[in-house]
Each structure stands twice: as structure tokens, then as C-alpha cells.
Length: 400
Image (tube, rainbow, N blue to C red):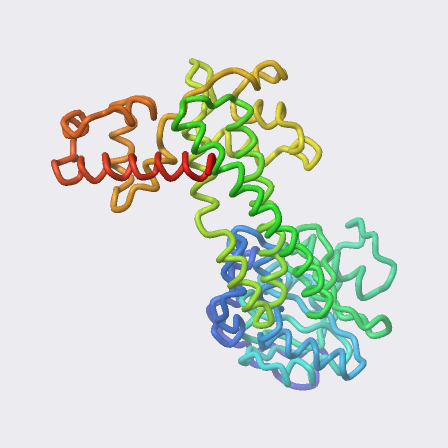
């Protein structure tokens, strides 16, 4: 039987629990007790971003955040490792194994003692407590305080996120993926989020204007590259602001429910429109970009480049010269067909493949539409009437 570190009494070695010896990168929290179950944890691609996934674990309304707040109110510090494997075990000395269910009060009491607390990667169990962490001293660190320097080195060496609570400054820091993120209180985050939301509302209004103009120009076959790229530019700007707000929603946890509802309402259909517009206007040359390549290139543009229509046009495959913006271009019809009620995506794809352009679609008769696989008489009439109504509405919206 193994002895405890001080050799005073035997210590049983607990059997490993699920999640304790997990992967080196924590996954999105799934425990209802930690996530709070609110809509604030669903936005912004939490599962694809390690920082946001761990911020969700620590968001207001979670048991871990409750424990951290108790530590701050008690004016004590803390060092908490979110994950346990052979690497973490090798840098732990002293302390004692626990392997008990996590609770905020247990965390608070354990942090009164000297040493770090080790949790499972999903934060549902307390694995060890009062341990002394001895990471590789050769790992570079920009921190000066002992606790924060240790936290940064442990995070880099183990790959697990580490939480550091400063006793003197009363702040909570998260070290993950080589980054340090300081948690703000909900009031400060809400202030920034509301400012971003007001900006998003203004940008969304401008997006609706340029989208309406583009629809009317498409009906009249008067679209230039500039008109199409202006819509792509606005869609990308709106997406970026929404992504920033999604980060605030994650940090706010249960305090961000109303913010999440407003964000969902403003962003309804925006991501789909972004894809449809790019599919409509991707160049068709032999070396033209694919849809995925165009989306990636857009995402890589800096904030300064996003203001430049030439740079945006180049990102989706057009020539990077200003003269190219005035060239006439014809949409394929994906965006307009997506607005026709009860028209499945596979049928939209077949219609575009068959006719090739929006103008040919607008000029097609019911019999022409029926020639497409999967389009019967009723569906052909629905498409014909739907396109006619959309054309009338677009023209009226522009000129009346």
C-alpha cells in the first residue's frame, strides 16, 4: 500500500474516474451543474475554441465560478489545475489524493491550505489537494508572482488550463493555450457587450439596405462586382461583431441570457446569406476559388483590409484592382431561390445547375422548370410564383 508524502500513514490509491485521466485538452462542459444550461453557453463556437470552452466552465451560474467567488470574498488565493494525467502527476509533490465530487464549498475550504488543487478536466471532481507544483523551470514565463508564474508554466507543460486567483489583487486569471485571460465581473462585461450590440444593430441596418439594393439590381440584371462585394463586406463585418458578442455571452454565463436572445434575433439568417451570396458570385474561371477557400480568405482579412472593397473582392477570387469592381456580373440565383418557401436545398442546387444564372431562372416558364429533376407541376408553379413575387417586392422596395 503506498504511503502518503509525509510517510505518516498509508493512503489508498483511488481508482481512476471518468474524466480524471482525460485528454490534454478539456472539452466543452456538459455537466448541468457546471454549465447552468442557459443559452449563453451555446453561441460563438464554444466547442471549437479552448479558451471559450474553459470560460464556459467558469461563467457565472456554474459551480466552479461560485467556488472562485467564495475564494475572492474570503481574501485568499488559489491555484487550480483543470485536468489530471501522468504529466500533471509528475509535477505534483506532497498534498493528498481525494477524488471526490466537486462542490464550491469544498473548493473554498481546500484553497485555505497551502498548495494547489487539481480537478478533473470537466471540473466535476476534485482529484488532489494541497499539492506543491514543480513545473520545468526552463519554461519561459512573463509572470513575476510565484503563483502566476507557476500557473503559466504548468499550463504550458501539461496542456491543461490552470486558474490562478490573486490574493492581493483579487483577480482571477486563466492560463490556456499559451494565453492569459483575466476574468472581469459581469457588470464590466455587460457594458462592453451592450456597446457591441448597439454597433451590431447599426451594421445590421446597413446590411439590410445594401442587401435590398442588391436584390433589386439582380432582378434588373444591373449588378456590378462592387454591389456584390459591398454585401459580402457588410456580412463579414456583422459576423465579426457577432462573434465578439458571442465571447461575452460565454463569459457572462447565466447573466448573458437576454444578450444571447438579442444576438440570436439579430443574426437570424446572416450566416446562411453570407454563404449564399458568395456562392452566387464566385468567379467561374479555371483557377477560381471554391466556397470554402473564399470563406477562409475572408476570415483572414484584417480589420483594415475589410474596409477596402478591392481586398474583399480579391479574397473571393476577383482581380485585386479597382477597375474590376465596375465589371458587370450575373448571380447564379442561390440567394433568391433560398427565399422561395418550401424549396429544399437539393432542388435549389439542381435548378441553379440546370439554368446557370438568375436571369434564365426568371425567364423560365413552368414547363421549363418541370424539366429539372425533382420539380413537378405544383413545385414548378410555386417556384414561378415565388420568384415573381420576390421580383415585384424588390423593385417596389427600391423605387417606392
